Every structure is written in structure tokens, then in C-alpha cells.
Image (cartoon, rainbow, N blue to C red; front, side):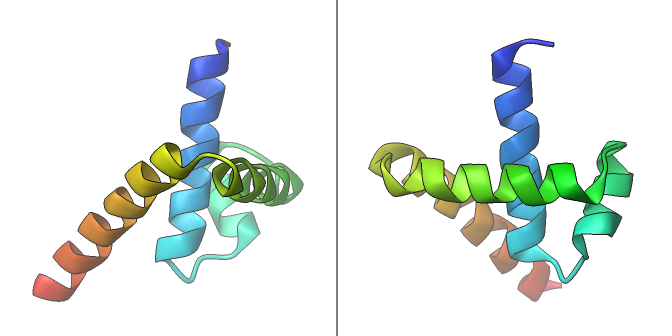
Amino acid sequence: RTSALALARQVAMYIARETTNLSYKAIGESFGKDHTTVLYNVNRIDNFLKDKPYEKELVDDIIRNLTSEATEY
């Protein structure tokens, strides 16, 4: 497992939590992880993005694109 892959998975969990009403358990099941892992990763990315304005803008852009596409249908 590379750190880049782990970070991408953590960001994906964060985005899933931000854009859906899924529980930590449901998100964990979709990633093959425990709900506590999802909780840890979501909090980790939330804290990570507080100090990284460029990365936060990228993640916010992904979230905007996902939520705007969902409302178009």
C-alpha cells in the first residue's frame, strides 16, 4: 500500500461522507473497511485540509461537481 493510494482512499471516504447521507458503517462496507477506520480517515482529512488551502480547494471543487451533477438529474 502506498501513501498516495491511502491518501486517495481517505479523501474518497471524506467526500462520500460529505456528499451522501451514508453512515460510517455503510461507507466502510463499500471500501472494505471498518466504520472506525472511516471515522478516523474523515477526521484526518478534515484536519489536513484546514492547513492546505490548495488541496481544500481541489476537494471542494470535486464536491461541488458531484453535488451539482446530482441536482441536474
